[in-house]
Image 1 (cartoon, one colour):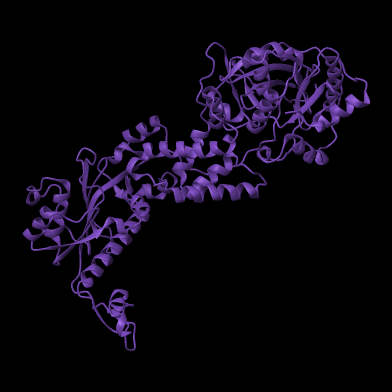
Image 2 (cartoon, rainbow, N blue to C red):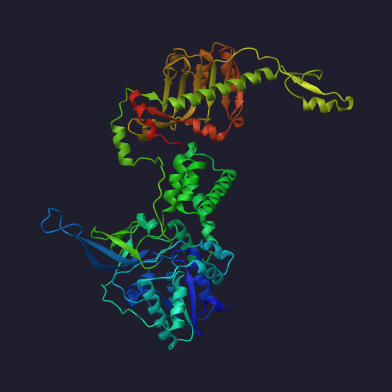
Length: 626
């Protein structure tokens, strides 16, 4: 496929403008180089980097940085010999080349190496590099627009370069003219912000105004994995997907979007593995809502693809803090380890920490779009060492509940009770012909059955007889006693609370804050109005029960003052449960768990235990929803 005329500087030189740090442009560079025949590749880097960059490119997928120190600048400020101020400070700086698989220039160097193509670094040597950064269109447009049309569309808004950037363009144009005498077909990969001025300087034969400066020797460092998010052009996880596709010869043209989907699925799996039964269910419908919201937020930011901040904000608002944190941690992970035979540096936003610990100003020689800090409040899990410290300080003789969760579970109990009472009255429902009132609603079945008579029938639901004061909820049945070792009876703090008997996971296994533990209900018994009862789990009258569920149901039947006992469970109570109820002269009213929102039930099952009433004053800072 011949290269477009708009990108040709001359008969022998083809320019491919790119946006640095873009995986889409890296794929486009590969396509152009493999579809056309070139005998030389020119890149906008100085010759002092060539040996180290070529060596580092061959070490991919291990991510490295080729660093060149810059002369120290001294800032005297308001210091004077007569003053009492500090000594003048010296500020160190470096420029570096990111050996990033999603950098178009690095992708071009990899292709040139495997195709045995000559490579020339045509940028002049500069002791202090001045980067040119600007906001550019989203590279995802390359999926629908050819690279020459993309560059032509951007051209009217590109500012004319001045200073060092303009001098570099003139110098690169002159060096391309020199290469033209030696090679028949040259591909020049440069920033989209530089290519019109390189082309102009080439055709105008602008004389070169700068000479190569003396520069320091370069060093190659591995980049610490926990700082790759500041170093790579794409998200580290998506960069890893590009490398995996390259190794396995899989298609990668749409990874800028498909990688976002893969990222969410991986974060979902890790989230479910961490939170197990109390994790929210990420249904396809909920995932579709998430992606639609991500799209809308991206369009608000005038982007076609989302950035990390957009992904996390959408995850927090759709799924909650826990999955948002898991998504952020997954996005920062790069699956390939760094090289072990070199020293490691750490990257920040415009900063670099050298192996000796010195922090210096860092400027990329392949600068992408500008990045900036954006804040987002997330409540994350404490480190294990801090959890152990909080666990050791726990007073075993003091515990209480978290009032907001008390209100939620009491409202849920009331809802289950109302459902059970409605089921009691459903057996007494009757149908009658419509006269003046629709009563409790149309009876569609009876109306269709008497369709030939043209009569309409309505339902009549008599008031439910009896009441309920005992509700048994079995969330996990059959329950494994080893999974639910904590069994407790809590008495009401006020008249609006129930007497609560439950079995749950051990709250000391999940300490989320100082004096704040987290547990998950396996099953519970509510007695309302509240009343003092002996501890169900120590009461010898229920020792005949073999399982946790039987003991809870026996206590509910024994302490109930009414004939009916509500039981919430997945499946209807079996013959054993019914015999147990008859033993105490009770009748069970089954409320299917499937009638309730599974997401709501999952939330209600998770509750927090506080180590004293004073912990309630700050517990909200540490409690996070799954």
